[in-house]
Image (tube, rainbow, N blue to C red; front, side, top):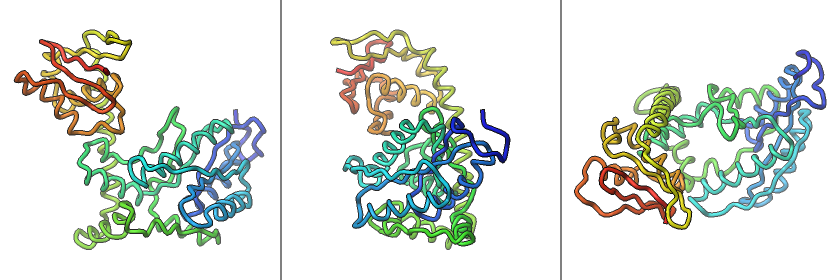
Length: 324
């Protein structure tokens, strides 16, 4: 248990890490953590990830660790990662970054990792989800708490980017502006510097706040529908035997599925496909719509092939989903 408020944290006190790129958002976060942690009886550390995508990135990573140490954070480390190409440059960098943060949290036994995402980041995420047309969950943006065991926390989601930058100026915190943030070859950069300003010009101020509010409303709806789908899945699942070779298989009752609202039924189908071995990141709305037609528009269609070598076939009154 933490010590009394305001006392120096004990050596066995829970450790909280700040993920810090050196930008205004994450430097303000690191400073806030350094101030608040000892008052809450917590230890505070920091991690910066060197993606190796720019000249001199290792030098900047070293500078960021020095700045975190100057704030009083410990332990502090810089982690160099290799960014792949899967899913595009932004997704690949994000995957590499979170893998490094997960490893750092495990290595140091951290109770939580704080991320500096702001309300502006949330608005951009919602707009990107809207453009993809991938449903309520995409419109729900980033969660306050996410990751395995609730590892990741985003305490700045209600703060706008301008306020966070002002906090850095007030404390004379040196910050680094990543040139990738203004590079139009990155989708998020175009949303930030082109799409959102155009929307604000056309619709007036308040677009960012409205998009962030939409994220919370969508998240509430998505959470409720997901909980409904989890209960419905138990009702319509008839058997779950292993297919030939020991592969996963899921059997669902088509009559029970047909009686569900579309939003719930498609969630059940997605959950079942993932349980059978389809990778969640490669399973898109169009895939689930095709599977759904085996329920709502049955005309003797052939089996449907999903990512991950998963096959969906209707056999009489059952929907059989298996990897083979």
